Length: 259
Image (cartoon, rainbow, N blue to C red; front, side):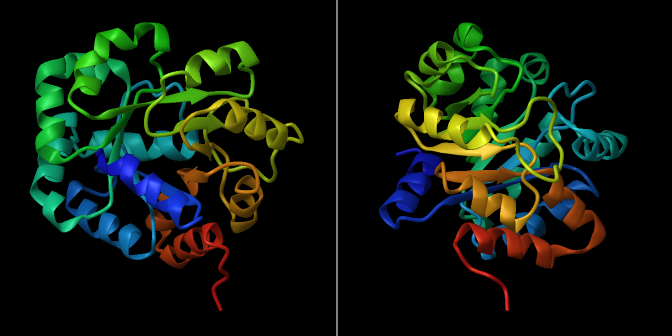
């Protein structure tokens, strides 16, 4: 069984919610990657979403964009990232999901990318600029047993959500804001109903992402879905040395509060 699918199933068996932090590969140097992954694992993350820096990240807000720029300025490439994950994969037990744009993967070469992902133990891929109508181009990824995670948005119609969730793998990434990633003060009133609708239609777990940045956000979102993805806040905490706040977010996903 795919490692990510297994981890999500274990959450459901234990009646726990999933927590997936996002980090930008190469932000601060790839030599930091092992320690960041081990920190997140030791604090209870279900999996980690590993961002690939890209020159035109259409879905990313300012914090993630700046992290990507820092990583690109360090010379980070997709090949470098996969090579580093290959080196450290035996030290990291939680699933790793790559988040990158289609151009990066196509430029890499689909066969080489798929082969290298398998060598690196990658469990899933999120390609935010890939509509389901174009998924066949990336069929080698799915054939290799790496889940291709689909996204739905607040503006998706019921018919479109039904279409996207049909045949979905791993989990559905439910985008909870209209626009790019980044911390928000609060969610719009429609978010709860939207998450419940997606969950009713989805045959796989539903995880909420975009704009989740506080323990209260985590607890609020988890009333309606199977877990959360947190990005901008995780990057900020690692950059500013406030890792204790990451622990607070993960503990909130488990219904705990740090004393």
